[in-house]
Amino acid sequence: MAFGKNDDLFVQDSLDQTISTYVKPYTGNPINVVHLGGVAESGAFALTAGLQNVWTPYVTNSGEVSGANYDLAAGGLLYQTATQGGRQVPNGIAVDPPFIP
Image 1 (cartoon, one colour):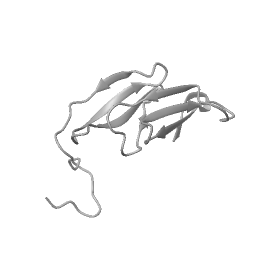
Image 2: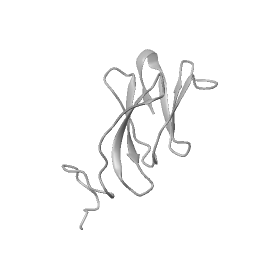
Image 3: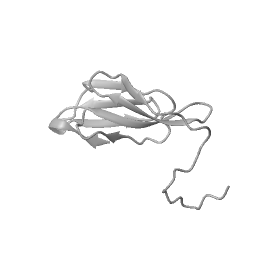
Image 4: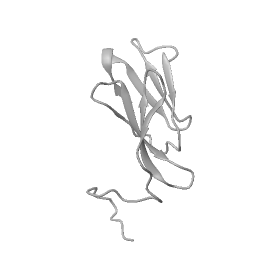
C-alpha cells in the first residue's frame, strides 16, 4: 500500500496479481487496476519519483527473477529487466537467517 499524487491510494493484491488505485474518500471501486505479469509473490512494489509508474518483482513459474515497471494510468508494462535464473540472494542485502549455499 502506498500514497501517490493527489493522495491516490495504491493497493497491491498478491493473490489477484493487481495494483488498484483509489481516490479520496477511498470508498467504492478503484478508478484503475493494473494487472501484473509473472508471480507477484512478495507483495512488494515501489512508486517511481513521478508517482506515475510502479516497479514490482517479476517471478516466472520456473523461479526466474526480474523487475517490471508498469504505467499506473495505462496499466501496461513499460520495461522489464533481464531475468536471473533461480532464486538468488541480492548483493548487498543482509539475509536473516544467513543464507548458506
